[in-house]
Structures are given as structure tokens and as C-alpha cells.
Length: 103
Image 1 (cartoon, rainbow, N blue to C red):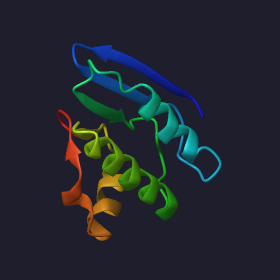
Image 2: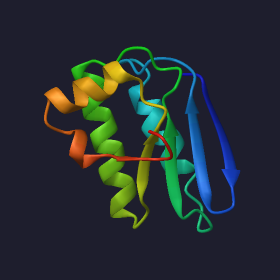
Image 3: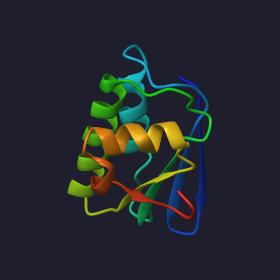
């Protein structure tokens, strides 16, 4: 999976460069959790380049969010397109996610 990270202050930004699939999903969660240093206060998952999210990917996003929040850090989605937000809304999980900036 193509993933880039950048840190700004206490924020870890994780930029996904492709869709989340069954094959690469564990890599995403592992990447984020392995980059949670003590200095990181919040995690922002930038999904601007994610064009499509299926039910499996939704499950991975929820699991990743829960694991990060168990570690006492807030988790945000950033740059979710209208289709992804609509899917989150239809499935009843939109309110479970926090959005960074404009979303």
C-alpha cells in the first residue's frame, strides 16, 4: 500500500495514496500503530486519494479508529469525498467519525 506520513507538531498525518483493499488493509493499521510515538497527540487519516470504499474498508477504518482511541489519541478523517461521506451516513456510522478541517 502506498502510504506517506508527515508530522506537524503533535499531529501525525497519514496520507493514503490508493484505495483500501482486503490485501493492503492490515498494512494500513500496522503502519499507523507503528508510527504512534509518545509525542503524537492525534492521528489524521487523509483519504483524499481514496476513490472507493467498500464494506471491508469501512470495517478497517472503524477498527483502526478504535485501536488509536484506545491508546488515548483522537482519530480524524480528512478530505473524505462526498461519496465516502454518503456511504458513512447510509451505513449509520458517519457520527462515529471526527473530521479534520473541512472534512
